Length: 243
Ligand code: FES
Image (cartoon, rainbow, N blue to C red; front, side, top):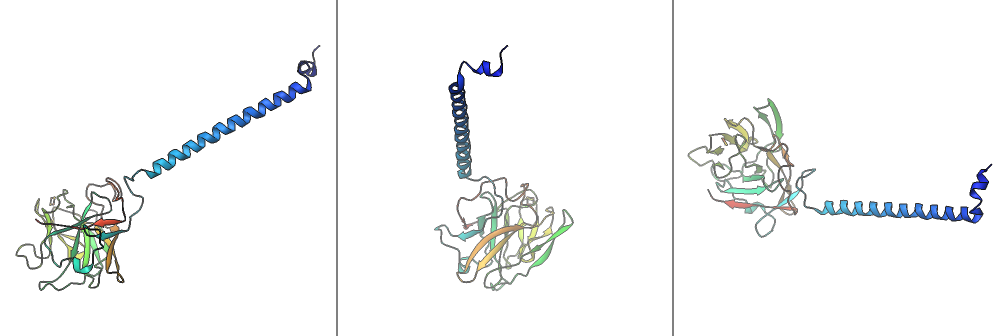
C-alpha cells in the first residue's frame, strides 16, 4: 500500500525543495506581472489626467485680461458702453457682459446687492451687486434666457438711449433685463434673469477676477460647468464688439 511518503519518495527531500522553489518563483512572477499591470494602469490614469478638461468640477478663478494678456483695470472698462464688452466664463462657449454702470451724466452708479426673483420657478437669489472702486462693475451671462440669442441682438442700452434706457434688451423677441437690479426680468417672454457672474476685485492691483455664477443656470446648459470646453489658462480675455 502506498503511503503519502511513498508517493513523494521518488523525488525525495531535494525534489520537494525543488518544487517549493518553483512555486516560490511562480508566485514572484505573478506578483511581478501584477505590479507591472498596476504600473501600466497608473500610467494610463496619469495620461488621462493630462488630457484637456471638457468640463469643470468647480468654478475657476479667472483674471480678466485684454487681448494682449494684461489684466483689465477699472479705467479700461468704458462707462455705459453700448459695445459688447464680453468675456467667456466659466466655459469657453459661455459669453458674459462686463458692464461698468453709470447714470445719465456718465458718473459711476454703485449697484447694491439685492434679492432677484426668478419668475420661472417662483424662487429668488441674492445678486452680489457691483465691485470695483465705485461698486459699479457687474457681469452676467450674455445669452438670452428665452431662446439663447446673443450680442448684438441681446445688448445694453445706455441710460441716455432713447429706447430701453439703462436696460439690456433682446431684439429677437423683446425680453428686457435690468443690470442695475441684478439683471432681473423687466419684460417677457424671458422668465428667468440673466445668470450673474460673481466678480472679485483686488483693490491693491485694480484688477478683476470672475469667480463663480449666481442665480439660474446658463441658457441651454444642464449646469454651468458642463456643455463646453474649460479654459486652458487662468485668464479670460475681454473683447469689445460693435453692434
Ligand atoms: S431669445 Fe431673447 S427674447 Fe427670445
